[in-house]
Image 1 (cartoon, helix red, strand yellow):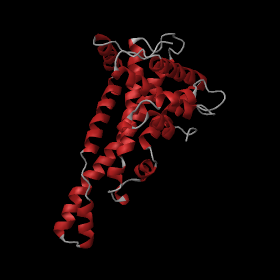
Image 2 (image 1 turned 90 degrees about the vertical axis):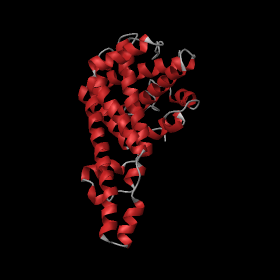
Image 3 (image 1 turned 135 degrees about the horizontal axis):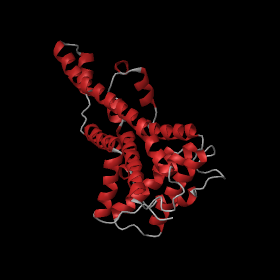
Image 4 (image 1 turned 90 degrees about the horizontal axis):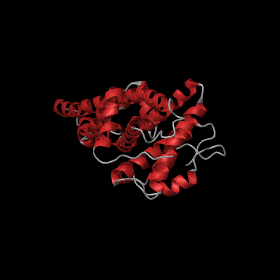
Length: 267
């Protein structure tokens, strides 16, 4: 099956234009996620101010601590709200992709390349968020966070968990999990072959294929009752992990490690 490739210049803009025209909410969520990651990277914790307020509770120290804690709580809230946005948009993307699962060029048309890239880019944001989340969570007083937010941050990979659970619920609600799995495995196969055969037209395109492959493997693992490593799996997990070990994704982490970390059957 043809891979998720992008020709230079015009082809890339057509893919992006399709998403902008047909999935403006998805594009907005993607941009919001990237802006959120910038905020997290620029985050400055208030550990010293909080310790000072506890050891020496003067009005000045308490005020300094609240000036630090306040933005932290708001940032946590913004992250949680972003996860809810992902939960809304993931089923819509999968629904569109699965509507053409029998199309031989599912990974070739502007429509499907755009959708696959949107899905993969949203997952990339989730990967990066889960790597960065400890920087803000560890310095916020738990009582200042609602029960649902506390549960959200209790998981090692909360943002990826949001994506996979949303996708799993979509597959369950569709009453045709096999159709969803066929769509995901078709995208995975196209991406795998493009990378394996060196058909990507640029390093950026190759990286996108690796990202799509990782995203599909993780989603397949959570949706399939037996996981990606099961006998009925249509994705060769050993071959994928071997190929992925030669590439990196979030924060220069090996792609095979990203896949193993976020799959429930490949730990």
